[in-house]
Length: 397
Image 1 (tube, helix red, strand yellow):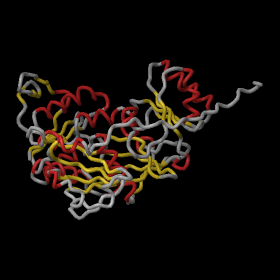
Image 2 (cartoon, rainbow, N blue to C red):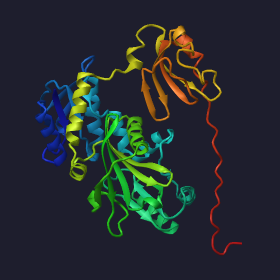
Image 3 (tube, helix red, strand yellow):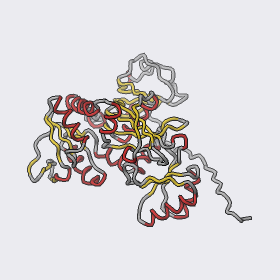
Image 4 (cartoon, helix red, strand yellow):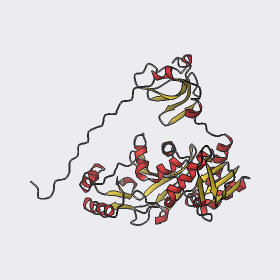
């Protein structure tokens, strides 16, 4: 395999370890400075130049895109995608994770734990938003911050209002987030590669610091995650479109809550903490994907006119509940079940004797005309009304 590592820091620990792991496995590796590319666009022939010369062929690229060059970096990754080069992380996934608000917006429609959050622009909306997320103390985050920079804890509503007003006056976008008290000064970093967590560590803040980032002096300890935390981390990364990710979670009383997802997670802290060869796991995964690439079924299986891929839901009360796939009659209608999704469990190519349960989702291939009647009508979910009682101003009647 010929692997390109997109990185502006060839001597940093993560880049050196990835290059070393690839070479130990007999792969050709080259570190490519992301800003040295030129994107050429021509009808039917997307191309890339590197340092003013035609780019040689690569089997795969591993993007390590820094926050300061997100726009150009994702454009380069997108160009590799158009050239049918396997990208360990997609351009869309990198963009989704880099913006904290966009990340939470995408996760919020799924059953994945996240801290209650609010995003406002108007000064009059700040106080109600603080109370909706649970009141003081409250966490205030800059949307573009990294490594704990731009994360503040406001102990009172008054200080929260003052901080937000100051940041907004400097044209900064801020996120108001519930403070998870039981997780104060601690969080979990789960390192996801493909469909599994290959390593995990707990980060613990020191002294009066509430941020547990290693760059802020936090200490680390290796951790074996239980199934719930592993499933949450993998599912969150997949929802954002990331194959390789560092998923940061809080240990809340009601289970894991996703705090942030990093598309270019550092290797030094977690490798030294866990003593695991994470760089090797990443290279092995990329090599396997190059040898056996994933096929986008929604694009490849719609070539035959009238056939396609769709998702069929099995709601509570459906006549399919309790039936096996064989008894459902789907196969008699030339509808093939490719994958069964049950909660956070993914069952590829399910057996015909598997019984269907309420809430199951079936990814099916077949004639669209026959499947159309099986797809439930899209209905807008009814919003639960929120009753908000603001504290009385002192001295009011």
